[in-house]
Length: 287
Image (tube, one colour):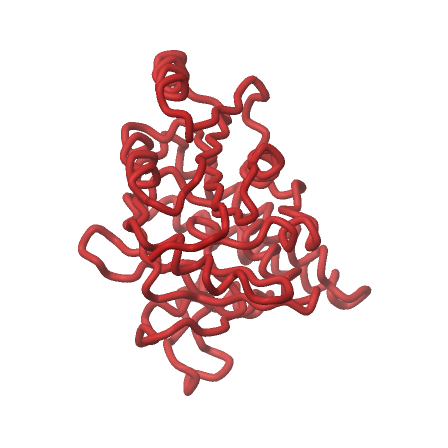
């Protein structure tokens, strides 16, 4: 499947490990990926040296480095500013994108208006993972999800899980409130019209925020079940407690940002210790 639009893939890497080479190899094997903008947020000197050599040998690979670890959202924006394609794909460094995935997403993203398309993130066995399609984020949905109280399906009502991966996989693209920043694609002009990623998030939730702003801006967020990528988890060298604490800060910032004062802000203050405790339990049980 070929598309007329030029697609630039932005990959942000921070101590990603050996899986990064597999990610880049898969993207280079995609006939519709015109260029890969690799944003180095901090890798060992040996890895950076290898990436620099690869960049010199591969004209479609562009390396941005020297800025340090500036956070995921800001790094994505740095890569997007250097990209030359009319379409921007954001791909996690531990995701192996199937050859036709970007083309399938681009065909939908080419529609009029701001359109953000997310792909189907699968584990090595081919099963859909958490996060690829999600409901709207609220203080309530976050508490239900983090406390493990969520149930799949619309019949669950207010107890419906924020993540939708336990529900049947749709047979065609559908609108959904949230897709994953691990694999998403949009037109470059729409991305900047929305304002790009909010750089106040250091790590996590910036994709949820972006989806929400597409909705607020009159755009659409769609999940494409056939645009698939295999996610290899557990490759990051970042400690679990650092990941979870970053998630907590990002969730609280999101709730505060969109809360309606004064009662919305009061609810954030009350829910903060609940989320902190839930995330602490996740760290302790992950060991």
